[in-house]
Image 1 (tube, rainbow, N blue to C red):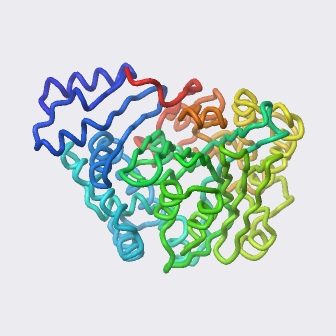
Image 2 (image 1 turned 180 degrees about the horizontal axis):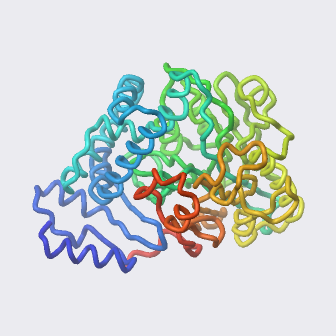
Length: 468
């Protein structure tokens, strides 16, 4: 790509308009030109929309080339924050992931990740396959493998809030699904990708994704099989089987190849490693059926219904998982997961029979604390704000931790049928987050300076928009 065209692309991105590789001059072979002609990216309201398609290596190349800067920044942030938190450098975790995942990743996804490496290198960013492998498996490594290695409980798993409803619960009798993602803001800022994949084999996938991850990671997706899904992590769970298939491979296989809710669940259960133990909320827009797959390590359950709802708030409902595989509470509303579970029940009762896009967006932005019994955004509210929580209530791991809900997504059966979803960046509400202001008030987090992002409140936006 020549210097003049690079300048033009920067202007296009800054205005939020389309960047299409059909207009990019690539000084490489014809094969790479052809790959890039199939892909495009545009930036809008804090999100990156990215379309890739083709064989595994070429769609990886497209992703690596078009998001090289973001992947590079994600790796640097991950390396810095994890060394500060654990005392181990990036190479330590890269080597661990290479050893742990060896022989457990399908060849298709190895090629896709190698394509990411090649695309990044063509864009001028040096990265190794092993580093891309670690970034894809960072949840397996940092949230499950590392706590076992250290033989210490990991307190800072992220959380999420979600629901799926259908039948009598919704305004039109069809499915409505909503979710917000929680994590530390320093790392969560790289989960702003809406990825549209048209693979050579299997189903098309529209999903939120993170850095170079080949699966959703935050888990909000639509598939060409008419399936939609999301999840919330099961809290206080760290059981792990090193012999299992990493979650990024199982979740991606399920999205790409499952034709039904049962097939989707079977793919996640087969060779389960315990990593990313979740309450998976699934829907079939063809039938209106919804399901909740609660997946621990030793135990799992799959419930389905055509009337009603399931909610998720990081506490397992299955008693075997809750009592035998976690140390979580079910009824202590000082705990954020429990408080949000109770609040979901209140909101579902209040809005039952009327749930639509507008109410879903409203519920994701809810700031009512059932323990304090008042509106007060914090770690116990559906729209989470760790940065506003003083930590005085037991159950919060640190005062004013800069973490919480950094997005919101909503989809309905009709939207999924038309390959659309609503997304909001910067939080589910309109409070926003100013890093400089936060660090001035809370200098104990100075170690995050330069890595902690601003998260200005953005409007709800439909993705994808029409190609011009």
